[in-house]
Image (cartoon, rainbow, N blue to C red; front, side, top):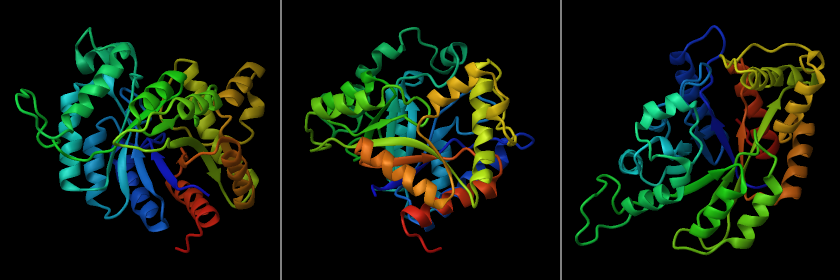
Length: 331
């Protein structure tokens, strides 16, 4: 079994609020550390009623202060929204405070709507097409000071903050391979080009000072419970999120609905089947088999597990089942 990590969107459940979600994120990270998960990442989203992790670096500092050994990072920072210098300073600061524990995953999607994206950076030239140049600029700020360099990231300069390329298409795979960086594929919600992206990345990979061999981390969603019926019920909240999102009505994470999938029109069922193709649902034994099959098919070097579950205790229990079943955790 490859290393298992955890992706948190700090979900805001219906009827709750951001403060409760942020406290739940710290609680989840502390449990993840105790259970032996390899890393804990937060994702940047803006203007989303059901996601509280917009200020990703700020929340990571809070999580880091409440844990001691768990690797922490962004999965990811949507770089077109930001000045690379600011991100280098933010993550340089995190690394200075918590050395050897910080990862920086970057993606080129805005993580929001066009109006909010413009409000974030207020720069008409900050387009996704400039993502490779932004990544190069960002990585340059982490290098040691060179004579004549006018713009410096302090903290950040000379610090070893691992940079990951995130993606859900061949573009990210090619860029990660070209730069010799680790690659994280968002198969937990956009699995369409998964196998092609893995192949392109591995075939085109160029060794670098950062990484000698290709390294692929793949996202999956897991909804684990003590019965298949309960697991299916838990998964319905995440299914509702996608239906609402594709309908143009995003909201907070809704409570589960029994037999939700069977109530949907065929077109929406087909959409969910496609976007949630890398979702594992069921009891411990069933989850174990599904994950084994996925790893055998993809050759993943690491798995990043997302479990967007309405009830926090049920979410903890789902991850606990994963930890005990797949990693042999005892507590």
